[in-house]
Image (cartoon, rainbow, N blue to C red; front, side, top):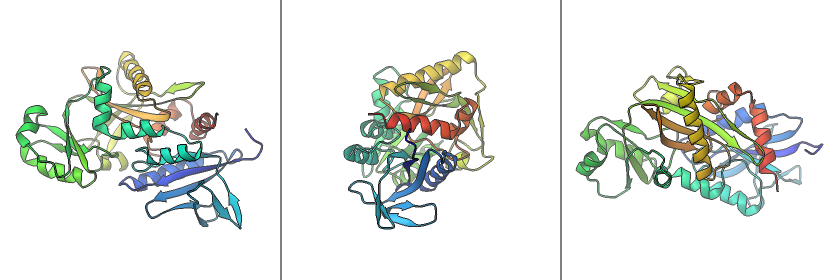
Length: 329
């Protein structure tokens, strides 16, 4: 590493309901990076503008031609980017494609992998072809005719209705009666132009974070999730006391290993990069895939930092590994 600290942009914000969570993730990463090696700044990105937020409170506009900014009349450049935008444009491939276009090193999945994984339905169809166990689902687009009988016949009740392109369970509903289907679809389609309807699986919810670089890999301990609400929704995820997240999960070593091995397999199938988190339902000890989070939360209350800590990795160590790998030619 250079003797001078590397200029690091931690991009945050975005244009989804996960804006505030992204800010919390970015600030937690900023507070945990080694200042001896990294001179990091949060860069807020949204449709309203792109802004570098300096440590002294100063705000500078970003030159989108090369992702530079001017401070005291001097043009400054970033050496690499940590992507902490949940949702669009950070997690759906738009921002990764921009960084690929200008040749800026960045952590996390590349544009194609990000775009594929962000669509829950299309990601599931892709993985199903490789024999991954996936809950049956239907895709509903905005303004498309809705056949309630077809939904009940093919998916059944109860079921989950959620935005197809989104995270943090925003706009997600558990449907227990046929009369709840249309209101649930309206809620999901207020967040996204597509909704996915999934068959309800009875089992234990678990999640597994992991990363691979060109020289190392780390699969974190599996976490068991017990929501104190009907399911692990936005409130349960981000309100202290509304869920129990038990790491390591209260499952056998054999079952935990099957979740970790499957996570590695899916990571490679989807051509992931950087740290991601895979969510599953264990049905009779068999993992059924729910979704992959390619920009998992990094706030103090998020699951991956806790898993990494149990595995012996601080956030500084984790992102040092990811930045070094991202900057390799």
